[in-house]
Length: 484
Image (cartoon, rainbow, N blue to C red; front, side, top):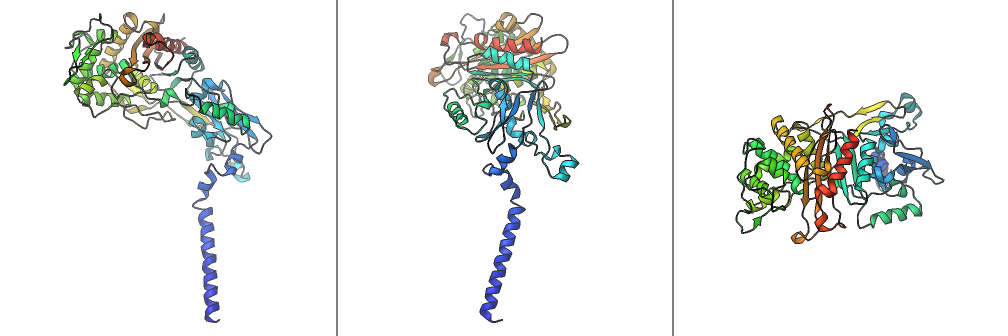
């Protein structure tokens, strides 16, 4: 073979080897990437080639599937879509999926390997789709949704003993089924939702941290009792009224000018929501001790998964003493989701033990057999405060409902404790305040529930915004539904 021919042969052989290597790499190392790429039309064709599994509430499906005449043979449907959208999320043929529809998409479309039987493996066919059973109690969910009504807000109800989320409401909401298909009507529904100034697509219960206002005073009170700054909720504090913020001439005052806030004990300070008491208490403790207590409840943790990841609730660290005082009353740069404040109340109701919030109970295959079971687990090491501190705070919260600012949460036959909050926002507090209410209820038979409600109703008159007036009725409705 002459030299030019030999070179050509070697070059061709190199090209063949390179081509084989490239094909092997594509079919081996990159196969899963291409298979799962949402831009690969075969992914959607496979996903919607058969009815999807369902998301269950109380054993009953709140989702379904409907046949179509298109290449994508089935599309997702929703039962009471706006009611359950904050729980399920959406599954759309053209806009993808989110929340439980996304996290458990492989179970719901049957592609999860755990669903495969020996017969499926032999025939190389996709198994029947599985289901996702949630922890939601339909009665609690419906009660919260009805009570929030046309307000913009959110509410979370938890079982303190297990961490199970019994209700998770966000309003205004949307209907996931309205854009589940691929037609022009689906696109119009998506555009209408996306262009809504009230952002119904946002899960306010999990994903919208806002200033918690006076509900954060429970965190400061827990820190003070745990630190030994005060021995009980009935020991008088050292609190002037008004309180001059350290290093400034600005006076921190109380909303109720007639309230007995000067040197008030923690019980009275919670009952009348005394800013002066908790502002000074935060300074006396120091930001590091308040931060340590807040973080035991879940603040500053960006990985709180329900399994849907919650937005990060923040207790700031870079503060001077004046800012520390403001943070002590849930202002300055404090941020909390309704889920976070439900975690605070749940820990208090459960004797100081905090369970990880849990939205999913179990996964099942097409035959109803359990594939994965989610039992209760402690959040971090579980202990947020001593049992004594938790009991003291429960007692003080009962006073808030029985004699103080939380009277709208009273329920006959149940022991109820709560804390109101009205959080300022906007430049120079120009915006309508956010109304908060956190609470717990128990029936004397070992059954308990913890609730957090936030209302950001921009249509309410400023002087009508209060945690007791706007938020407490929703908490009451959810607690009553949880403990009928």
